Structure formats: C-alpha cells, structure tokens
Image 1 (cartoon, one colour):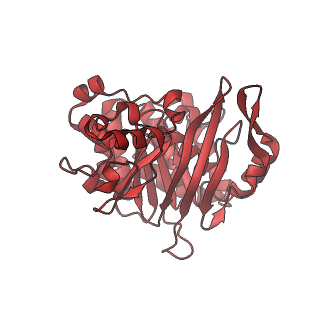
Image 2 (tube, one colour; image 1 turned 45 degrees about the vertical axis):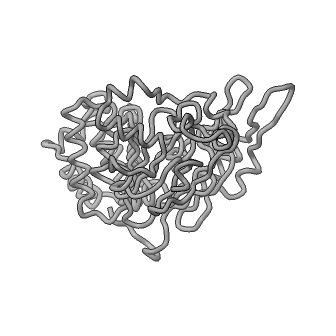
Image 3 (tube, helix red, strand yellow; image 1 turned 90 degrees about the vertical axis):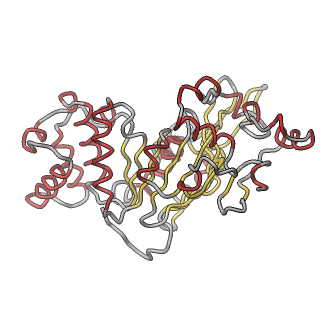
Length: 362
C-alpha cells in the first residue's frame, strides 16, 4: 500500500473547478459544481454530506467512472501533474434549444481518450471501495479468478501472484483462504463481499484509496468489523485516504482534514479536530447541523431535511439559503447578498475555509 513515486511533496491528486452535470426534464442538475481540493502523500481526507450532496459523483469523476451521458463537462483533475480531463470539453457542451437545456456529448470519443489516460492510473495510483460491493464484483468469476486476473493485468503471475493474494486475504481476516477463493460473489456474505472488494482495491498497492461509504450496506456488527479492519490497514500505511461518509463519528477516527459538501459544492474545508468542536463558531451552518446530528440524531432529523433536490442546485445564491438559521439574524443587505450571490470559499481567522458570507468574515 505504499506505491509512492516522484517527489513526496507534490500532491498526488489536484481537482480544480470540477463540474459534473446531468439532465432531467430539460434542465441541468449540477451534481458537482466548481469543486476544488487536493490530496497530498499520506494525507487522510474525509468528505462529509448527506445523500445528493455530490460526494460520490466527485469520486466517480476522479476515477473516471461516469464517462457516459453526460458525466464530467468541465474542470481539471491532475494525477501527478497530468490533467486527465485535458481537451475532453471539446466533446461535451451544454446546448439550449426550444426552451430546453441539454448536454450534447460524443460519448465514444470522450470515453476513448479518457480511458487511455486512466488505464495506468486505476488500481496502481488510485483505487476505490464502493458502497455496494456485490454489484462491483463480477458475478461470473470466482473470488480467486478476479484476484489473479487483477494481478495478471499488472504483470504478476504464478507463485508470486498466489503469495500476494494469500498475504492480502490473511490481512482481510479470512479463516480459510482456499475456500473463499473458490466462492462466487453471490455465495459471499455482506462482510465477506466488502473485504474482497477491499482486497481488490489494495492489491495494486495504490497511492490513494477512496473509501465511498464502505460500511453503509452492512449490519452494525459487520460494520464495526470493517471499520476496525480499515483502521488496522491504515495505521502504519504510507497511502493517502479519501473517506466518504455521512457519519462524522467514523470520519473522526480516520481522517485529519474534512471537506463538507452540500448541493454539489464544497461549503467548508479544514482540520476535522477544529470543525467538530461544539464551541467552534466559524463553521458553516450546514456543518453545525451535521455536527448536531452527530450528538442527537432525532433532534436534527426533525428540524433539517438533508435530501438535496433540483431546486437547490438551480439557486443563484447560497445553496443553503432556504434552510439557513442565520438568515433571520442578519441585516436586509446581508440577506440579499446570501439570496442572490453564491459565496466562494472564504478564509476565516482560524485558518480554514467556509463558503458563507456571514461566517467567512469571522
């Protein structure tokens, strides 16, 4: 898990102005809108936000897994300085016709160029663990076949391949490696599927592992077992980690830096130890709501509806305007600013960034 190359001070991933849009009923849905962040060697980043906030689509964009219609339309994703989205905007554009808006995309040319750039990156530089492991595993091949073929593509075969697989499955805490190798995905339990998915993600010794809600589909007992396993794997690892979750309690165990997303945009970035402090006054109001949910889920679910919808992504001003508890406490001039102008990430006196016209001044 320490496949490091090049200058260790250079960011492995740099995302700038990423836009991933979809169409629905003649309107544009901005699943990811102007998102920027970077991942340095050995950095542990958490991305938090409720369903529809853009977390998973951001990760799919980095991995190049949403190449169909419409997918990424603009922005920059640099992997070790190489922009894998360079010139792809030539094959994708927004078109307005007869009162409708659509995204026109040459899927074949877009995907062919993008895949040629991502072929050597997936697995060796960046790997991903998905929310639903059984849908990510091929139903046609045994666990052993999928692991050996993954290594074969990377040039490792025979006894060397089997030795790597045995070592990795032992780390995944399987009692009988021979038996698990013979099984098909439909014969695996939820916990077994997720551990196999984790093994497939780690077998190429990636520099960055993306864990996208890796315990969501599991029961409480298995969930804690997978979390403990991830903790053991990353305790002394030199790999970077992007952990995507709506659960701030889990993120607090794994990451040092936190990105909070809402309505397809980043609303806050900073050290997680500061952001999760109850008395931390500079937080975005949405982060405050998530933080309250961490301590009292019933109370927050009664007062906040976190499900993101199209009306939010169509808003010209702050995405959180209609739900923001600060609106009733500010001047009319300040309220109109929040209503009509989208705030960019503003630095606070504490050193982190908040996309809020009110809190950005603190």
